Image 1 (cartoon, protein in one colour):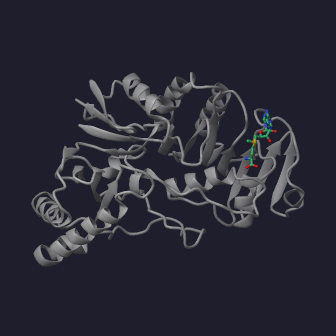
Image 2: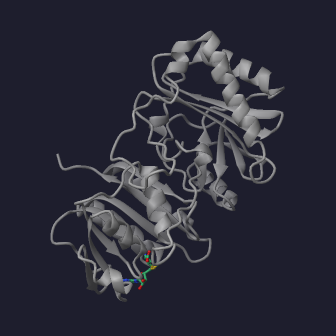
Length: 362
Ligand SMILES: C[S@@+](CC[C@H](N)C(=O)[O-])C[C@H]1O[C@@H](n2cnc3c(N)ncnc32)[C@H](O)[C@@H]1O
């Protein structure tokens, strides 16, 4: 059984998405936004747009008490987890309101660590030891989880009530590595990233760009080049310009005045769908308001023609009947990309975000 945590209010669309992908033969809601899918084919590794987290091959794990749970989980890990690869431990709760269960989860986690200290120090030594890869997070102190490394494991214990839980173990011994589940299994607890706030930005839309960067584990950095399509009033453009990257911002309407004058920003007034850069750029950013078919086509064309290396593109919807259009991105983009995510972000409204890294020319 795989468990999927739906993005808030998106349970129905997650269920439809999984049915369309023939991901499993039986679906059952365990809680409001927690979907259990049985008989899942092992081969499915594609993105699930409306799920924030997945617990592959989850089993019921009773929570009799904090102490007994920590003991039983430590025993399971000692028996079933290799002690020579880095691993992460997510102990999270999904019941009640707000932070319910949070403290209980912390205590269970601490209990597991204490058990491993006594019973298997080599396993404990590997906890949270994956190297932080890629460009350092330019946003300073915000807590960020880097993407999974190839040889890294993940343990997830999800409490659905104070006494009930589900356990999922991903490592090479279980034949399921988190790095094979990119776009489905998140390195973030419950797949949640707090929505970024910056009062200096022209609007709050920049939070989608920042969240996509965190999930990708890659950040626009000094000296890079970006094209921002549908850029006005400029809160996406504001992010790379602040970091010392160059931006060509395309829109029918001008940007906020200070961005129009910014030395790293070149504003081009015109149609985003007609714009072509004079050479490849590091990042395509696109938050244009358009029919989803048009944004989907634009993204596929840009990546296929290698006009950009990395991309963050919003696909916007009218109502709730168009989500199946995303299936084209799910089938086409993985062939063109080293990394591809398609997700209803914490910061998204009636839209989803496609972000990733295109393949290099060989
Ligand atoms: C959601 S807003 C973008 C917000 C922007 N990312 C920000 O953070 O400030 C969408 C923008 O798309 C622009 N737009 C819509 N259709 C366009 C087109 N065909 N060509 C250029 N811009 C377009 C609109 O003028 C609008 O400014």
